[in-house]
Image (cartoon, rainbow, N blue to C red; front, side):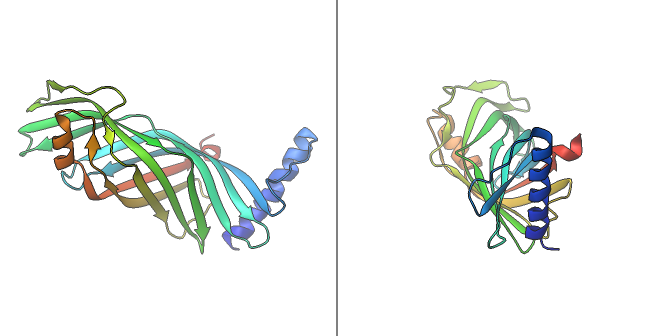
Length: 216
């Protein structure tokens, strides 16, 4: 059974259940598109290529809708991603010099995606902000001043993540991708350091999406 067929059946069951429970008919967003609400807990990690340093992400959330075109069978996604600030720890010169900072990734609008032939591809744009920066030999105890909300990438991150041969009804899905971190601006003396240590292509990201329904 194809993903689209599974989802169409799920949409019918969802609408029928809502009708029984509320006595109110569920009306799709349009005559041909059936929305199915989805909600996931999001955890994961990202690794900066230049330094090899890994940073944990989440727990956050992804909430929105799968969008089924009942005429063509195509399946889309529109959902809001929310992630809390993360702690970055960068070790240089075999740990002799260290930097720690808070990193906040703020999506610019909903994440969108498609499911075709069992493969999920999602796309999102986001700003990356760095603040509460500390540096020093062995222990980072020297603060690097930044204005809250100002030290950001000059342009948004373009995040394209994918998963192969997924089962959309499974309790968890893992999506992965690579992305470029643009240059930073408004970071005062940290501009050059962040550009040299963080900015550039080939960074990896992996997110685990655990269905809220499966967690209950």
